[in-house]
Length: 282
Image (cartoon, rainbow, N blue to C red; front, top):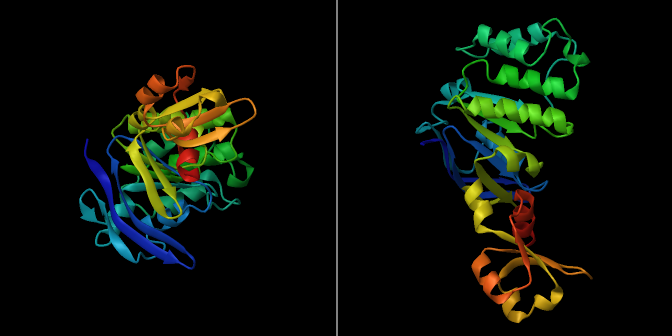
């Protein structure tokens, strides 16, 4: 699989915040989860990617071409889904579509109508009457109806109930099954546990992790046990340790050594959230 988007040394100073030397790749046919706590710089990065603010340094390439020199082609080949939607509530779905479609040279109205039908939407319905979940489905229908190769999403499942989130995740899995790619910024890491192929962790403007999700989960272990198992030597095996009156929980990257030195502990597969919080705390 080849990279479709390559970020090299992306840097931006905004007041007291600095996005510093961010570098990673987004791979064809994959869902890349972009995670970090509020204030980490995720939205700033997406604004830089879209050219809404100018970078101080670095380069972004799309299919090997700098987007700075090929901005029109880049925006023609991406789809964008934002949490707020930025739709006009007084327009119908058809009227809003006509506004959006005019921006793309490869708009496919048959594909749009097929997506609208598949998502259970009505073209004559006003946007202001849609639930948040239906608005998000409409946003995705718009974003993928011009043959977009990359879908960029900023907190698309925030505030949605689990059933709607699952439906949206199924839509994304079907989309990447066609060889497309998704860049999904989200603080709901449980969704990414289910569907992400790659994980990028941003903290205080710096990339802390950029790794294949399954490899990332396999190389870490969530260890639980009695505090009597802890001593100076065993503590050194953990990235972080949380202790309570009942025991401890710690994240390790050396499961074999933990097994040899700590005989009465339980080692579980961590979640993405476990890993994210441990690296941030560290």
